[in-house]
Image 1 (cartoon, rainbow, N blue to C red):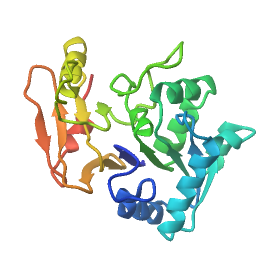
Image 2 (cartoon, rainbow, N blue to C red):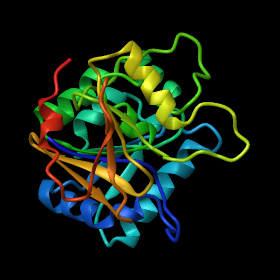
Image 3 (cartoon, rainbow, N blue to C red):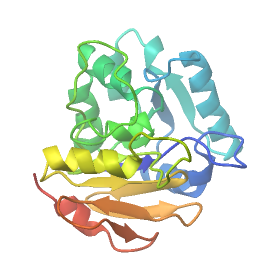
Image 4 (cartoon, rainbow, N blue to C red):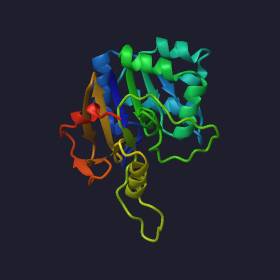
Amino acid sequence: MDILLLSNGKIAGNTHVMEFAADAIIEQVKRTGAKHFVVIPYAVIRSSHDDRVALIQATFDKLGLDCIATGLHRAEDPVTAIEQADGIIVSGGNTWVLNKTLHDLGLVGPIRKAVLKQGKAYIGWSAGTNIGCPTIRTTNDMPIVTGAILSSLNFVPFQINPHYLEASVEGHMGETRDERIQEFLEVNKHEPVIGIPEGTWLALTDNKISYHAANGKPLKFFSYGNEPIYYQPGDDVQFLMDLNY
């Protein structure tokens, strides 16, 4: 497998989506030889799916990559479109809508086959990263659809909290992100959670995993009954792929 799981789409100073992970994307394209990426924009709620595909094509153009982005929403047969593509990009947005749509269209199996068995490139950010987990229960998004489905693509054996923010807002009396994650662990004691802040990503090649950051921010590892542990970019985090629950 060749997977990039980005926390978010842009950081300060970026003009294009995924720009902060440009080097990783260029290397992935070279490594896999991917030319045609199918874009899954189902998470996008407040703008058009076509506009999101255009933003990704603009990123390819800026990076000098001879890659074509086409929207899965335009395909007559989405399963065939996934089978024929060289890679898959899943946009951020609302994770609940994205995951439910993938299940409703019968796309979870085909995506897993394409990525895990055929080695097609996968890039996701935010919601597109959430669905790489066993479930989407550690998303920050509201379940704005009924009949929401929790199980997802299960590329990694742990939960991810993208856009992770270690902060307390003055005057805000609700739970912090850390407190919400600790609540998750109280109910799901054997399911660790990885907090990845803005401008960071996880890279998986075959069964090797590494952590990267455009801004030096650390990954935060949460597990039940233990103090969170920070891992810096470049630290050995291979143990994450050996987690079982």
